[in-house]
Amino acid sequence: MREATASRHAAIDTLLALRRPFGAAHYARVLQGFGAFLVAWEPRMAQVLPAQWQPWFAASTRLHLVQQDLTALGLCLPPAVKLATPVTPDAALGSLYVMEGSALGGQFIAAAARRQLGLAPTHGTAYFHGCGSATMARWREFLVRLEQDLTSPEARTQAVQGALATFDVLTDLFRGLLDDRELAAA
Image (cartoon, rainbow, N blue to C red; front, side, top):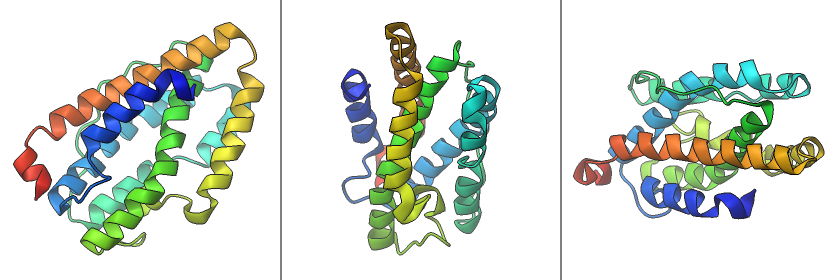
C-alpha cells in the first residue's frame, strides 16, 4: 500500500507544508481542515469497518483531540466536508491506513509546533501528539492487523482505492483551506 500511495502522500505533505517553518495561522487552518474531515469521516468509518475492527477504531478516534486543540487556540470547528462512505470494508481499511499513517507523522508535527509556536499536547497539539510514545507501537499493530485482513488481491486493490480516495479528499480540502499563502505563512 505504501508504494501505491507514495505520490499522493508526497503531494499532501508538500501541500500541508509542515516540514518547514510555519506560522500560527497556517497551523490553525491545518487543524481546522482535519477537524472538518474527521467530523464526516469518523461516523462513516464506524458504519463500514468490519466488526473485528470496531473496538479498535472506537478506541482510536481523534476528532475530540482536534476539537480540544481548536478550543485551546480559540478557534471553531468548520463544517464537515462532503464525504462518500467507502463502498467496501476493505476500502475503509485503506482509508484507515491513511489516517493511521498521519498519526505517525503527527509526532513530527507536534514537535515542530512545540518548537515554532510554543504549543503542547495540553494546549494546541493534542491531535498531532495523539498516542505520544505509543504511536509507533500502534502503527505496527495496525499494519499486522491490516496484513491479516487484506489476504486477497481484490481486498488489497479495494484498500488501495480507499486510501487513494482519502488522500484525494484531503488534498482537495487543504487546497481550499491553504490557498492564501500569505495568511498560511503568518
